Length: 357
Image (tube, rainbow, N blue to C red; front, side):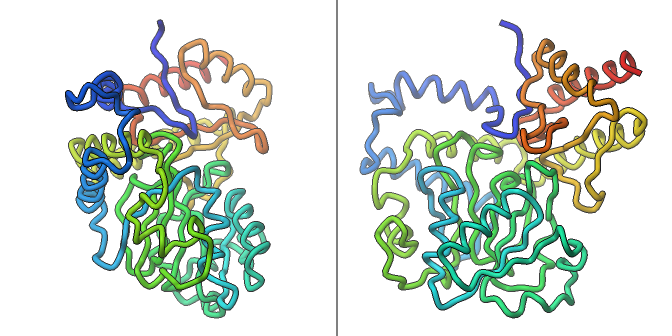
C-alpha cells in the first residue's frame, strides 16, 4: 500500500508511535488479557488513564488550580447547548463571530439565551474588536470566541488581549498547538480529533467560578459533570485512552513550545510560497489573522483546483480540498504533520505550479 499523507481538517493524522501503542492495547491491554475496548469506566485501569491525562495536561498547559479538566462525549457542537444552559437565563453572552463555526454558535445560543449579543467581524474589523481599549464587550457577562475558524482559515492567537475577563473559547482546531494564558478565560472546549486524538471526546477546561447552581438535567449540568470527574455516565473510554497516548507523545516531542514553533514555521513557509506566486494562487485572509492550523487558498485559474485535488490524491496527499461552502484548497497543519510530510506536500505543490503555468 502506498503511503498516505493526511492533511485533513479532521480527523487528523495520528503519529505512528501512538498508533503502535493503540494496536498493542487493542489486543492485550497492559497484559490483562483484555482489550482496551473492554475496560470499565469504573475500573482502576480507567482511573489511572484519567489521572495520567490530568498530569499530562498540567505538564502541557500549566492549568491553574481553580480550573477543572472535564472529558465529555461527542463533538464540540454539543457545547452550543451545554454552555447557555449553564450560563442561565439571567446572564448575557456575547458572541464574536469571525467565521462559520462562530456563526453557528451564535445561532444556537440565541435559541436558549435571550440575552445573546452578536459582535459581527464581517461588519466591523477584527482589529476593532481585539483592541485592548474596545469597550463594547462591557455590556455582556460572558464573551464567546472561536479561536480558529477551520473553513475560513482565520485564527485569533491573541485572545488574551481581548478586553473581557470571562472568555468562553471554542479551541477545537488549535488547542494544543501553542501556549496561552488563562488570565481572562472562564471556559475552554475542544474536540480532540484535530491535535489531541480521535473523534468521540471533547476536552473542557472549566473555571470553578463558571460552575453555577443552574437546575439543569444531569448531563446538561456542568457542576454535576465536573464533580463526577468525567464519569457521571459512561464516557468514550477508547477516545480518552487515545487522548492519554497523544498527550504523552506531545510531552516527549517537546511540549507546546515545540508544536508552536513547528506550526509557525510550516505555515510561514506555505504562506510565503503562496504570496510569492500570486499570479497562480492567492490567500485572501488578512495576514495578521492567517491561521497556523488551516491554510486556505485559491487558484487564480479555477480549473487548477480540481486538477490539484486529483493529482495530489494520486500522490497520496489527502484532505486538501476546501470546505464545500467555500471551495478552494485547505491544508491543515496539525501537530502530527511532521517535517517530512510537510516537505513532501511542498515538493508536490511547487512542481504543480511549474507544470501548470
